[in-house]
Amino acid sequence: MSNWTDAIVGERMTVDREFNDRIRQSEFSNQEWGLIMTAVEFEIEDATDPEDARIVADTSKLPQIMPELDNISQQMGAMAGGGDPDGGSSGGAFGDLLSDIKDVILGGGGGGSGGVDQQRLEAAERLTQEYADELQRHLESKGKFEQVRLAYQE
Image (tube, rainbow, N blue to C red; front, top):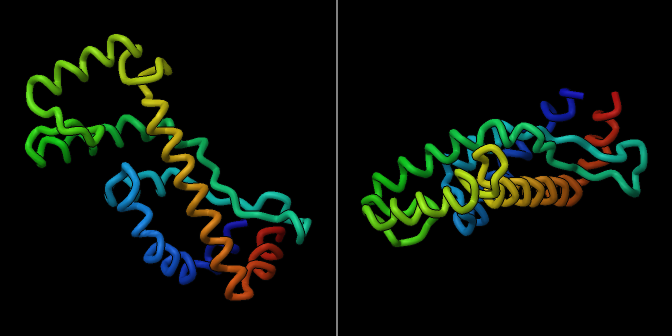
């Protein structure tokens, strides 16, 4: 099944460039997005059915990289003048205090799921599926999706 991904490297580069605007509109930096993409694999769901086949993002490994994603976010916040890594403008000691209070209330890192910020995880999952959808649209527009779908089955 890896042959199908090898066959679309050039197409993915094109989609990456086109998807950059969407990344800029998201809560993730380019560096964070790069890390997210290392944890995501793409599959073709219903590959044997030409009508229902679709590219899906396997995000099962995302929870493992979320602590590192948070580290990147905190480092970027520190470089930007100590602002809130969640994108707010509270900044400084007051922002740290609010963050600590939020961690206590939400169970240490948001959502109470072992320190994984559930909202950021869900945002990453949504964004990677948007990317998968865009990749499929691109392949279909180039008349290559059928070839990729068949290669996936091999």
